[in-house]
Amino acid sequence: MTQTILIVDDEANLREMIRLYLTQEGFRVLEAPNGREALFIARHEKPDLILLDLMMPEMGGYEFMRLHSKEAHTPVIMLTARVEDPDKIVGLELGADDYVTKPFNVHELIARVRAVLRRAQQGGATPIDVLRVADIMLDRTRVSVRVGNQSVELTKSEFELLATFMQSPGQVFSRLDLLDRVSGESYEGYERTIDVHIRNLRSKIEPDSRHPIYIETVYGMGYRFASA
Image 1 (cartoon, rainbow, N blue to C red):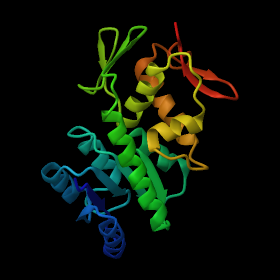
Image 2 (image 1 turned 135 degrees about the vertical axis):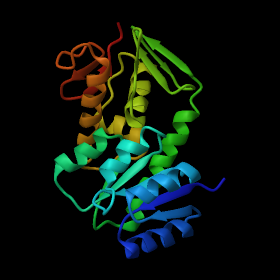
Image 3 (image 1 turned 180 degrees about the vertical axis):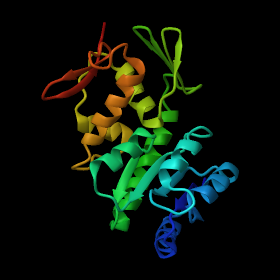
Image 4 (image 1 turned 90 degrees about the vertical axis):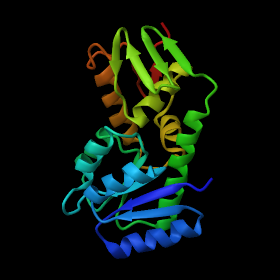
């Protein structure tokens, strides 16, 4: 089945270049010059993945993610000319799955697109539908998480990280291991994105995120989900 990619960027030439390469790779491609038009297209076309510029007229990428995340959990790769870490962190906190800094190598972009799509497909194919560890329950079919009696809203990346931990309580995962689970590929220099996702996940499931009892840091090695 042909997968659909929505490119959201106010640079027409860049959209055209990306569209040509993605079309050659067998994808169906849609385009929008700003977040406002992208919201309309996403509601009606339901793309499998969105390539999203951050700085655009009428509605930028941050506002688009805030609004779209209330309607769907479509994987998002940010296309950003900004190089400051805080800008990338804001996007990840809003639910983006990955980011590429302009100017970028289009072949790397396509590799990231395939990696994020592969991870999304693998997430839905797991044979374990409901996971229960301690007082946390994760239901893949319903895409829901409960901590005690409270429902918790997670981004797609946070959901996949939590599922990875809960499937193997006590197992230590390195940042590269977790990045592979979230992004499908391990890219040098992107390990810190896992720390951002972990921090956000802790803020949502831990009674006190400063003293976590579920997701433990194993210094010098990575993270693990408490087995008891």
